[in-house]
Structures are given as structure tokens and as C-alpha cells.
View 1 (cartoon, chains in turn orange, blue):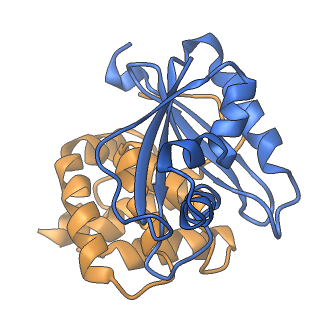
View 2 (cartoon, rainbow over the protein chains, first blue to last red):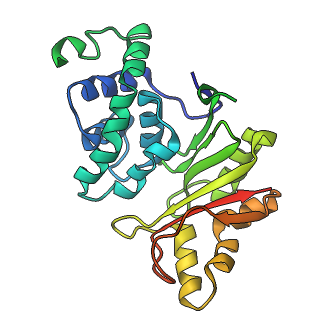
Length: 114
Length: 133
């Protein structure tokens, strides 16, 4: 568990939705839109998106920073190649955290995904 | 410090601007900041608050400067490009960028390039620097 001292709060329900989307094969664009939409931000808002990717998928800031350069472009193939393997790499961890936390296997779509 | 003890700092304004930083196992801070136009809080205040939060654990700051696909404004790399296009060396230009200027005020005065920058004077697109005490 990371130690965090932030002022920005992270909504567990949004993290669970991100897990569910990822389990169903969503790409980076869909995940970004989910965060922006749930938090009421426009499509150009970046920093909360980065934070939610870090929290949802246990990624480092350096790993999610490429989203900064991608946002607002159509270079989806490039960003998916960079980010999706990282999400898959940590899948066991975030699935475990999601099921042990506030969600259930059903909540995050495990039963329907595979 | 183990990897799972990494510290994060985030401070966002209602409009979604702000700062997001992370201190890794080796005391290296990486951060992303969006201030300026449309932000209700100055970038310098965000940066200083982040550095105060991490405190004495910080050994260096990793500047990850990129020019996006759409050429969006990036304070550090835009400054480097402006100065190097006018004849200044890359090393000298880096010393007067936004991040290095603020880091120096906090005692981080040694700056070195990490890896090889991408681009050429006036049109750099990728620069990594390490700013140390």
C-alpha cells in the first residue's frame, strides 16, 4: 500500500468501475473518459486522470505520464501499447485489492470477462 | 524505502489543475503540474507545498519534459527551445527553466541530463534532467 498524503480524495466507486472496464477489455481512452465523466471534468483535464490510473492499477507516476502527451490526440494505438501491458502486469494485485475492498468479483466484472 | 512505501502528493483545484508528485524508493521526486491560465493557484505555490510535504526525504527531482503530439505548451521544454534557438547552450538553458529555477531556491542546485535529449536546438521534444542538492 502506498503512503499518500494528498489533499485530493479518490473515490473507491470510480476505481472499481475502472477495474471493471479494464477487465472487460477497455482501452486507455475509455478509462480516461470514465474518470473525467465521473468526476465532472472536461476532456482536457489530466492530473486527476493520472492519479486515478496510479491508484486503480498500482502504477508509478512515471508509468502513467505518457497519458499527458497523448491526451487530446488520436494516437490511441501508441498509448494503448504503453499503458495496457502495465495494467495487465499488475492485474493480480488490483483484482485482489478490489475484491478485498469494497467490491466483489461480480462488481468488477470478473464473472463476465473470461 | 521499499517500493510499496512510495509516497504520493496531489493537490487539485476545482477546475482540475494542480500538481501530482511521487517520491520513489531512492528519494527521487517526479511530478506533473498544470497551473497558469485557468488555475486558481500559482504553480510555484503548488511546487513548494509538494516539496514541503516530501521534506528531507527528497534527494533529487527528476524532470520529465516532453513536447506533446499536438505541441501543447510545456513551460520547461518551451523555455529550452526558445533559448537554444537563440544560441544558448542546452545546459545553460536548462538552468533557467521553471522547474530548475524553483528547485534551486530550495537548495537543489546541481543539474544533469539523464540520457540523450531528443531533438535539436530550438526543437527539443524530450528532455530528462536530474536536479540534486
